[in-house]
Image 1 (spheres, protein in one colour):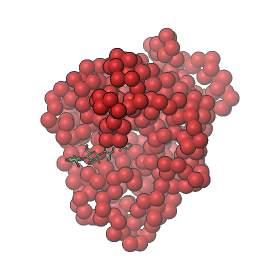
Image 2 (cartoon, rainbow, N blue to C red):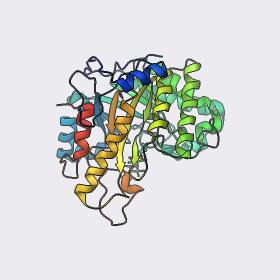
Image 3 (cartoon, rainbow, N blue to C red):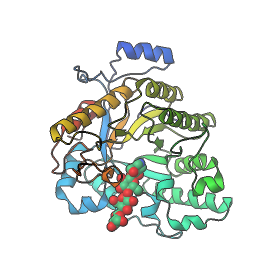
Length: 372
Ligand code: G3I
């Protein structure tokens, strides 16, 4: 298991940290040498403080059809991740086929613009093709999972710098700390599917950073605390068994009507750092369905949500990357599940539908290194 943030084919210079008093005390108490990005309450991140790389999730169809979208990504991102093209549902039309066309379009764009690439995701209940329901034994399940990971990870070895190996392993509302979300792999492999996936990914590309990615661990509330505990239980088990894992991915789909659990999340993050794992923010956006309709007010609240969350994380450990789940309101998943009662379009992302920067983008510029 490696530590440190040596990510990226296209350079990522490290500079010294400027730990704050809170960080030193926190770090000392946690026994973990941590560093912080200066709080952004007025004192912008000073020069010389390492800031995360910024990136965004990308849709292959929009990349090919929308020049303004492609230009915005090329101008602002140091890292991109296919929003869907590397999921089982997109890659695997059948047990014998792999369909890489869309993922290759995004990989070629990344190469052309010297942008690093993330992979999402090698094992996720949310994108399992119907044919996997026909799997009928443990041996067949393991063979199918390992073959998929070997084929996909080795194809992009040296180009994809980090993978969401396992995504959303924790149930919506875990009953116990060892509860796992049921799907084809847990049905036949139980909890072993997680270690099997990480080991297969490490064997296929020993240089890729391997990430356990999760959502709804950011907020105040019993369900969110239970999800943090379950995620930590998985991570600790993997580390203690010497399974190759390098980081935790906080998806960061921020519910604007929920309070960030500063103490709970920071305690969780300190435990993650004690395990020697890095932290990435992998799918940041702000679900604005409950916010006022007025655009200026709403955009300011969205930016403040993002700032509060990123401050909370960075005061324990600077994320090695911050990616938003899309870059423009023109292409966002949010209205699939969170439409507004006033029927106004959602505004969850740092650029509006015309690719114009919003206050959210200014927050990202303070926390992270943009392409330009
Ligand atoms: O491309 C087809 C289009 O041809 C077809 O006409 C249309 C109607 O069926 O579907 C289109 O595909 C949709 C795809 O998004 C492309 O936009 C799929 O139906 C739809 O299920 C898919 O939803 C994605 C979802 O994951 C499921 O894979 C969202 O875009 C994507 O943002 C969302 O991302 C997830 C992360 O992977 C994990 N974390 C949560 C996050 C948000 O749900």
